[in-house]
Image (tube, rainbow over all chains, first blue to last red; front, side, top):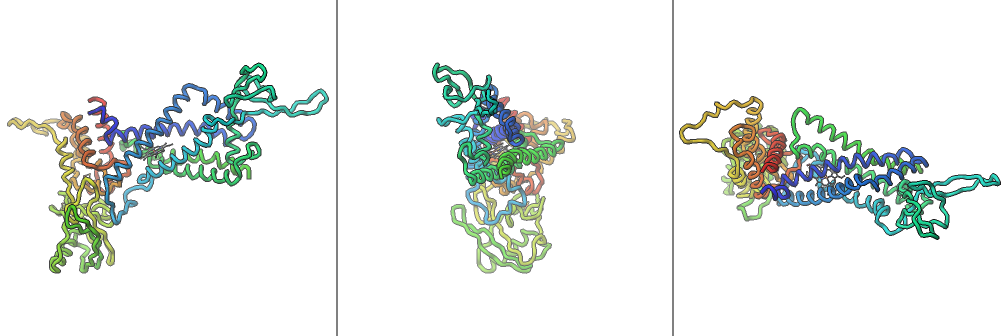
Length: 290
Length: 248
Ligand code: HEM
Ligand code: SF4
Ligand code: FES
């Protein structure tokens, strides 16, 4: 019985819901801390730091494991959430003609499935816009180019573009070709000479409205749309966590009058600060360009 | 007081029901809600109509049978009371009051406001008991010392009257508050330890089989429970279940 109970019983489903939910909360903290760099340094230094950070994240085996755990958690949390919601709906086939639910419960707590589905739509859109473009799509991806001024023998200043690479910068010339998005090859010898950095920083800034010229997209209205979409999605996340954070502790059996207040207030603080931190990024980028 | 009642009428388990409107007059604020229903039923009988069927027994808040979903809340708008303890002074002259049966797949309607709550009995049968030696040398329960805090918590859990208001109020029609009260009252006491692991696994299994929903911790049950059974019991049951699952 215990084996099937681990997956099938209503309580076991709820443990998984809570554990995956809490794991996703820790993911949110990490993801936010990394991305907040975007909000605070729009300049060349920030671009460098962020692209190097992104490279590190994409190549560290520990991070890889964590990212797979995150995908699995989202999948599990979603499937489990849907199964629980279907069972819950079936448990009351006929509803009340008059139901005063506000008298006994919060609306976030009653709408976790709706809020979760909206978050899922956000996650899919977000992945399509960044993760897919950077990792999966067969299209080439803009690399981090360092622009420098050098003076030639005549004392004339000259613009030179360099690929920012893992080793040392390499001049962007016709002799260098890019393969597999980031690999820099010597055209003649056909040997790989360096690994370039993806310019994710500029992608984000272009996406939310800055440096339009660079990629020719998106148009301003698109940037406005996405900024609003991101901010609204973070409000949705706020409501999901407003109930979810403390609820997960209750589910795994952590409930005692001596620390309930701490869990509840931490949950509300978490529900406000984390989505707020995420929302600031597109807002600052979008507003800076106006 | 003059009131308009909107009551769910359903002739039998398989019949289609509907909300029927009844005006009623001369209701005193000191009447209980059930007494108001009695007044209505007397009028209906006098007119040759069938009276509204509803469950009731003790009329003092201990049997848990008076299930009515009144104006969108189990046992009405008052806190910590059953329908029989609800006074008409909670309402104003001219109010319209909805009166509906508990709504849950596991509580099928028998007639009008009467529902079949035997699913609760079957959950109890699955594990809500302890083994006691009754061979003539039964041990006096008071001979076993129990910490005061545990005894108090067990007693609080044991005040559950099985009314089903928790299920009725829960948006998922979940029976977690009821089952957790029953699991807790035994799990907290030494006498309950023999079957502790089996009990929680079997009662949860029975609860799932009866078609109750899953808890999403909305807390509606705790607010509407006439006995103030705490969500702490649900957390305790979740711990007990986890322990039982790991150890089995
Ligand atoms: C970053 C993303 C997310 C985080 C951090 C998160 C976090 C949480 C947490 C902590 C809970 C409380 C668990 C409990 O009460 O035991 C929860 C519940 C829930 N989540 Fe999410 N969630 C996320 C995304 C989603 C998605 C994509 C869905 C899918 C549709 C979803 C659907 C639900 C549902 C239906 C519940 C209520 C389940 C219940 O209480 O039984 N969530 N979430
Ligand atoms: S827990 Fe409260 S609401 Fe639920 S059956 Fe027991 S007394 Fe009634
Ligand atoms: S009739 Fe017994 S509790 Fe109301």
